Image (cartoon, rainbow, N blue to C red; front, side):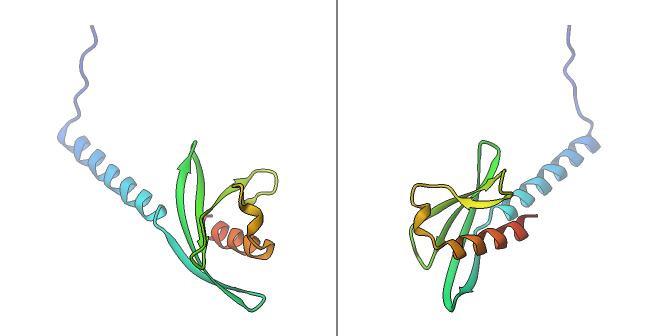
Length: 107
């Protein structure tokens, strides 16, 4: 017969505090990030919304109120790249700058 395990009050308080810290940390990480880039004299206002997909951190990216693009980490290249069907629409130098900015922010 298996007995039910019960936490004492100190353990319960500690677990509650830990859960609160984890929740706040996850919430902070998953906030939308906004930043500006100027590439070849062209200003870009970038919005990056992180989300989890199959235990992998990805980003929904838009710039200058464009449609959204999905960025994910490419294991071979070791950087974030646009992976959706419209990825070819993003200028290469902008994609590289966004990847670098997000990589530095998430390391």
